[in-house]
Length: 144
Image (tube, rainbow, N blue to C red; front, side):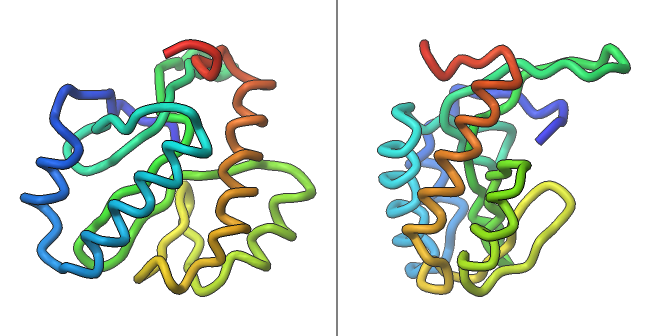
């Protein structure tokens, strides 16, 4: 997820309580926080006004453009969740086929509710994303 979005000091739980107006989406958000924290080993942080991320890494493109981004994360947007996980490679296609009911965007995965997603597959996809980033970028995977 290459963007100008940066980590903020906004409290993640205050954000969820003030931004998420649907009880099911709130519960799904809290469950995703628990899972992604466990999978990544990082505490949740707000990235920009609406994204919750875990860990960070530094990216640099051949063009010279560089910046920092979250390892994995999500946003409980009004219409649907946005998942920020991406593990390029041959395993990615197979994982996505087993993920459940979702739509693929350019830089993220969209789904309506957590029960639409296979959590075992999401865990594999999240861990594969962190592994890929760790192997291909300057990663803060080893230190907060």
